Amino acid sequence: MTAAAPVDLAVISAGLGRPSSTRLLADRLAEGVRQSLLGRGREVRTRTVDLRELARPIADNLVTGFAPGALREAVEAVTGADAVIAVTPVFSASYSGLFKSFVDVLDNTALTGVPVLIAATGGTARHSLVLDHALRPLFSYLRAVVVPTGVYAATEDWGADGGSGEGSLPARIARAAGELADLVDGRPARTAPAGEDFLPFEQQLAALRPGA
Image 1: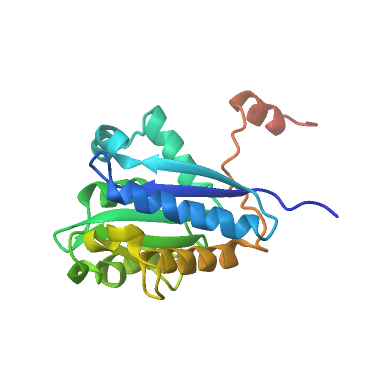
Image 2: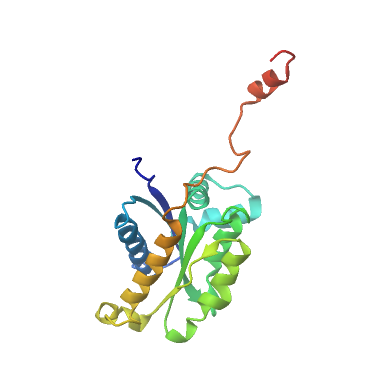
């Protein structure tokens, strides 16, 4: 019996502060997904993309169309992943500008069919609708497969480790992580879209010669 391939999980964190509740939520979601998939015999390779470190390259990319090294690696990590966790702080009742700018850097077909778990952090619970009026439509536009449960964490959710009831933050994290694991488990590993393989120009010319 052949062991299933490891799952490549990309985690996008748009938190700006240090320490960051957005990064904390992203880490807990990633660990929830990892534990859920480990329980099914699947190893997970996690790559966290901290947008705070990429703010300037993202801005440069928007005006030049060129992604420098670190940003290019982040884009490749996200677009090549088997599943994505996307977490943003709430700014002005929506996702942050930095988060949206990073999404704008991605090719709008790169996440087609990719399972995505959406999450957000904010000061009060009244901003929780950001999940369904901003994040879910954004990833639906990208034709990603968004898990049913989005996770919103307000400041009070972090008290006493978020509680332990059915609607507590740990329970919501576990439910959302399980839903993402359900979508990933059993799916074949992603392969690079046709045409992305680089063929040196000399080889292209050789292929055109008669008798080649």
